[in-house]
Length: 207
Ligand code: MN
Image (cartoon, rainbow, N blue to C red; front, top):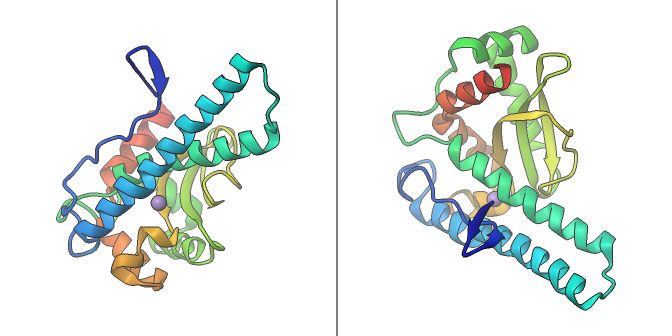
């Protein structure tokens, strides 16, 4: 959240690469629409929700707090997850493969092998019902990485677990390039994962 002209609002973050940087795995059009329409939609949604709360406070009007906060959680979740997602994708020749360092050790210790982790993550992403996310997260209590299957943007999230890697499996993330073939999209995702960023996040969490 940034302050603009004294207003505290969310802003659409710029991508850390050009719109065509992930071709041929994700097209310019796919990334552009995902960023400019969908991610931007969550930014607009959360700002509208703050505005609605503020207006109600000024007018001393009662709101349906359950509906209002559900809507706000949905949009904040969408805003944050997309920000993480863009940053854990890498332009060609810079992504994919196998991670290195501490994150690889942690994955091997937990899942037995990188291949087993990759298989479980893929199955997590494939089996997400409707719209949601697959995530690799870290539990600071047990010092173990684990998988999380997030529904929509905000359901099944464990408070305070640190997200290391996310994959958006909403249909809007892949329909232009892969139609309804989520499996093909997930295969492509493995070619553009930015393991360096995942490792950086992991090191920060461990520090
Ligand atoms: Mn999305």
